[in-house]
Structure formats: structure tokens, C-alpha cells
Image (cartoon, rainbow, N blue to C red; front, side, top):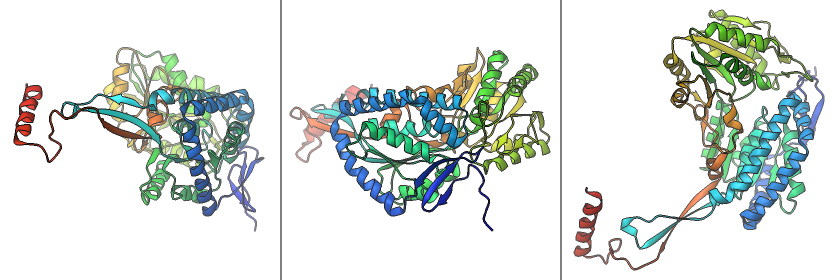
Length: 498
């Protein structure tokens, strides 16, 4: 019996990877599947291209990257429509994603010279006769394994910064959104057609594993924590350095002096945008007693107005069909252990959609609190004060982002969150800020994309010393004398012994 194809599930047909819309089942892309030999050959070609790309110099790379930026900006609607067709994301959400990616590309291109350019560094006493120099050199070939939930914005966060730093890039897009990944490669080739500086390989998880073992000089991965561990293990075989942006279970803390309307609006946006399929999405909310009931009412009113469907709606389908059962399990588990659904609930999962669901009084040991849900659900729990909220927020191994709403204590609370990022009186805004690093701690991964740290992530620091004078204190040589050592002791006591 022929298996029935579930819309949205990638399939292999005659050596081609086929992606389909999760709501309609319409075919969105058909790309050749790469064998391990194909992956290796692509990396070999990229290595030769990387020498040409690095040799262009920062000014020439900037000019080409800005032309690519302009190409993306002028075709925003086209790319956003492809994101919608392939992954089901509402067009408005897709436009926001593409525009944010364009801004990151612009910043990386314009700031690579300032961040990575050669510079003099101050010398120290013991080696005062030497000048110190620091520069950043490209790795060579960077492999990027991208996700399906933000198939433009997230990989661009690695691709743009790696290219600006002088590397060639080989992208393995998610098997759920390969057509979007190929579109990015093809649009870059329209601007840079001399060498395959940016290439893609397509397929299922085995192609990603082959990329890890292909000889790339660094690999950037975005995906689940479980898959991130597998990526690290594969890269460890060759000591290939990795950047891991893994899962999250981000929390919002709402203090007693918060603007409740703004907090509710941000909670609904942060938790339900892209159908909740956001690694930095708000999945847990801790509201201080006294404002809890009023805050919950505001969230329910806003979330209850959202529309769900394939086109022209606020919330689209769940892109990865298997995630539907995870969402259902989390809702059922929360309700079975005493949680209450004040919106949505047990019947919210209606494949391929999940209706907005707000759960309160959910036990902290339930799956809905401790595991990444990746769906349009929010848990809201009452806490005595912000100290309890911070303790609950930090109780999990995840540590990606977070949000705080309040006035007097908000910045202090944000600093106490065990996370790589936090927003005060907003949600998710740190992701769009191209001047800031993006990344997490704990089970949410390590390394940073975006900002100056993101540029440095894709370049090796090279330290150089150069003699500029005769040594007045010749101690780093076997020609030194007892008098030299005595002088060294006298000097160090004088300068550092006070």
C-alpha cells in the first residue's frame, strides 16, 4: 500500500527533495538531493572560491554584499511569498522576516572593516621593545545548517556575517524550506557570479551530517538542542569549531508596576507570532500577584481575536506536522495536572493548525513548562514577587532570551535572567537589533551571531608582535645576566608591588 503523504512533510522523489505547503499540500520546491560526495565536492569548490573572495579585500566584498542587500530589498514581496508558500507563514510575518534580514546584511557589510580590520594594541612593560598587532582572518569555508521556522532571517544571521568576514559559505537549508535556501543562493549568484562563494546542498539529516564531516572550517547550526548535540559530536571528530543556536523556553516577567496593556500585547505577539514557532518566543509568563488576573484578561482578549488559516490570517499552519503531537501532549499534560485553559485547550489542535491557547496555574514540573512547545500556546503563572519569577525563569537548562515588563526594577530583573538576551518592556526586539549579539547559554547553545561579536565569530584572531627597538631588559633570552634578572625584580616591585 502506498503511504499517504502528509502535506508539509518533505519527501524524496527520484533523487529530488520535494517541499510542500503544510496547509494545502501544494508543491513549493524540488531540489536535487546531495550525496556525501556531492557535499564534499561543493566544499572543495567553496574552498577555492574562498581564496578569491578573501583576496578581493573588505571594500570589494562590502560593495558586492550591499548590492545583494539591494537585490533582496527590491524583491521583498517575491521572497516573502515563497516563504509563505513553502512554510505556511503568513505573508505579513514573512515580510517582517525578510526586512529584518536585509538590515542585518546591511550592518554586516558596512561594519566588517571597523570590527575586523588590523589594529595596533598597547604593549606591556616586559616586552616594551615590541609593538603588538591584532587582525582577524577568515576561516575559509563556513558550513551553515539552517532552520525552517525563519528560513531567511536565521541563516542570514550566519551567512551575511561569515561572508562579510571573508569566508565562503555552504548552506544546508532545512528540508522543510529548501526552495527558500536555494533562492538566497541564486540571488547572491546574480550579484557575485565569478566564483561559487555561496552554495547550497539539499537533503535530509544525513546531508547535514555529511556537511559536518566535509572539511568545513567552521559550522553554524540552528535547530533543536537534541540535534545540536549530534552536530557537535560529528564536528568533534575533526575538531571543527561549531556555533550552536539551539532551543529555548523563554519567559516573560510582569511586575506590579508594568503597563499591562503593553505587556499583554507583547506576550501575545512574542508567544504566538509565526504560530509560536520561534526559538526566542515567549512560552512562559510569570505575573506578580495583584496584577495577575487583570493581565490574564488582557491576554485572552487579544489572543482571542487572532485569526487562524492558510491565507490572510494572523496565524498560519504548523510547518512541521510532527510538532502537532508535541503541542497536543503539552496541552493535555498541563490540563491533566491541574492547569486551566482560559483560551483554547484540549481541542485547540486541529491539523494543520493550532488555535491560540492560554493556560494558567500550570505546575512547574509539567511538560508545558519544562519542554520547548513550539506552538501558539502561553502558560501564565502567578508569583509572589519578581524574585520568585526570576527563580522560576532560571530553573530550566534553557537560556536563550526573555522579557521583563515593569518600571522601577525592570532593568535589574533583566540582568538577573539566565539568558543570552533580554528585552525590557518589549518582546523579541533584541533579535532585530543588528548591533547586538544573538545567542544563548546552557541548553540553548553557545557562540554569537549578529553585531560585532557575530563578525568575530566567523574570523580567527591573529596576534603578531614586531620588534621595534633593542631590548633594554633582555630577559627572554639565554644571553640574560644575573644583573638583568635583578633589574627585572626591581622594576616589577616598583610598578606592581604598590
